[in-house]
Image: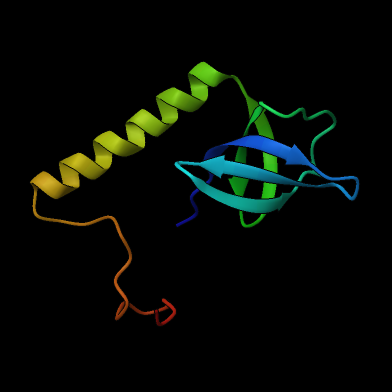
Length: 92
């Protein structure tokens, strides 16, 4: 399963790289797939690449949907977090 996450651009470097943030977590990603990106824009990030821009409302709606799915899983006694012993996961 692939998951792309909306994040906000907080810095742009001269080399096509930028820093994005979500919930206090910052990550350096490639911005080379997008024509125009500005600090403050929201982008969809997958495997270290910003794939597309989206507006703030769409980013917030997507993050709210993720939170609702996590809450529903938690209420059902399940977890959407990967387990360390699951096949294909890296040890912590």
